[in-house]
Image (tube, rainbow over all chains, first blue to last red; front, side, top):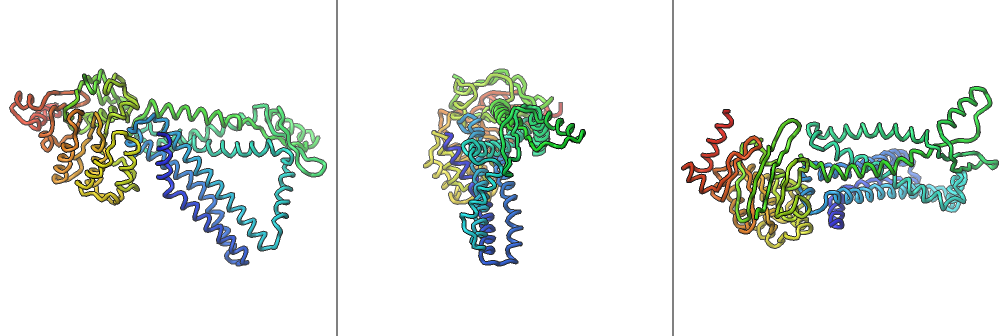
Length: 289
Length: 235
């Protein structure tokens, strides 16, 4: 049954979302051609439109998957969703999977657009691609990632996946909770209200954990000018207070930077907690309007 | 054995009690009219039986099973609202049901579409309210379900379409199943009822076989309904 749910979810969502991607691709190709053909007047316009479309694409993808979730879990179509002979939580998992795939595809489309523009620029200026690769390697080195690929790449991928899930799960939870019988009277305002409250609460929790959990990335500038980083067991608040004190007594600010990782410990916990809560709402407190 | 067994069912919306201590037992092989004025709890009762509302108290069994995946597989529910995605064509909706319900008969549904003069390729968003009702009825009656729950299936359509829908219901209804037909248009449908339940203010006011009601009161069900509820409303 899960496979069938996923199939029908793709069938329902594929009618619109790919067209949003298509608009971005068309604008990117226009931009690439105007770079290659040196159409200066068109470059400016297409660059502006492309940047707006890249932002809009992410927003529209999220809005469409959330709107689909709302319609099929809380709107009229919920009458069909919740009478299917399946465990209601399968609805959530299928929608989460399909939504995640669309968000991931959206990211890859944007990545493809950036690559296309870089390649077009290289072709237009006669810059060999190997030189661009070297530039990328240079930035990789500056951020101290060279030699740490085995750790850095999986961590970056995990962070991207968690970010997408974090956004989706917050919205799915808000829609589900905001549509329970006690909040019916607020209509679509219920989910919006829950989301706003949840967003602010999670921002505060993230900041607190980022500051207080003794786990951080320490950046420092090496002799060659490249950045080096290492994971340290330090509390970001303490470090910040130390920096302020040092500054106050004019001993100079250290060349070390520190970014707390506590928020990233919270993210998987919040994702898990919100998913558990959403499943519970769907299974135990369903009340289709 | 009861196909539907309800014991001490209560459902509130905030401070308002919509269903109060309801007990009900219904056997298979009958068409039951669930009648009552607006706000009497008909839709709420059907939504609970269909699994759309889980925040109630009481004990409910369908086919001996507590409400859940097994009972959803037995129940074919027609809501008042259009619940099929409007971008779908009739044939997409039929494929959807065919995928999820093992008791769905695609051939029977396609035949019913033809009988109701619906174009399988027509998109739902381009259909009139009556056409959408007919399509949803096709989907619901296309199943060989043990329980049919029809919520106001003739509520929003003209008298001619009402007759077409009622004929389709009778034609597709299998005699070993149970059908609950909620309506307040009693005069139009009482001919098909075996039994009737009068629901008022969340309580069962009257529950009996149609023939016995007619015999006892010497009136049609519609006339008895008007008497019972004009009394309650004036109170």
